[in-house]
Length: 68
Image (cartoon, rainbow, N blue to C red; front, side, top):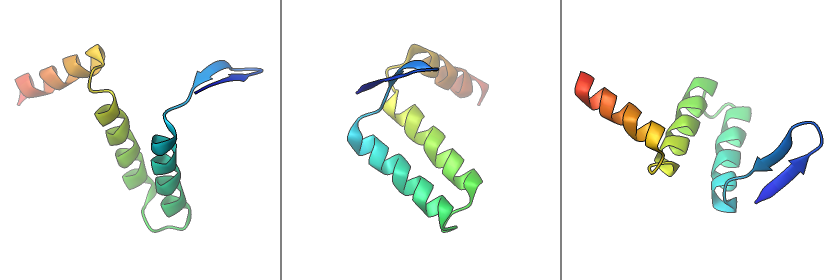
């Protein structure tokens, strides 16, 4: 899905099932079931998991493995 926003331009949205996941995490944060740092880690983890084919992320993962 793509949106054209007047000031920002074209924005590519994740698939609907991913949007539901992000919305659920945001809702849990809003009602204080989870703290915002936990929500941030969950969100970043989801983005990284969804972008397994991204070359930059693969390089970052390889660097972490080499450092460990």
